[in-house]
Length: 172
Image 1: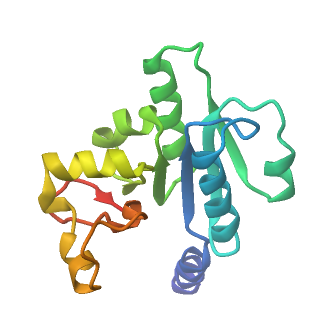
Image 2 (image 1 turned 180 degrees about the vertical axis):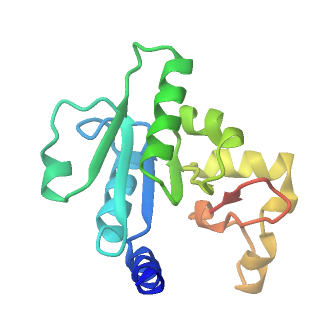
């Protein structure tokens, strides 16, 4: 009986949906670019994963309820330490498997203190990405542009950031 119970528990654990916390620097009823990307990401991953959404405090929770997305917020009136500790407790208590961070400083502060993998998503304009390339071009793959026969930098440069194993966390 003990082995059967252990086997059933293991099967249930394997079937458990993985949990992803998506961090967004904008409240759900504010913002444009980062918020739109974060919402699309949450909605598209919602079928296969349990989504937790971490953002600035929202006035309207209808989107979370309609999409069955769990919601946690930070309050800018709190200290950074308080927001980070609340987030760490939430991640541990809810057994979050992955974090996708869209410009939330509290997740960046917390990264060294947690084992949960964090993917940082940077939303950069053409000007900002080219400025970064001037500072550290080994993380920008200019060969993609040349291989495609592009003599100049394409307008949509922000899609050309590479993942690098040399960096602590993945950049996409």
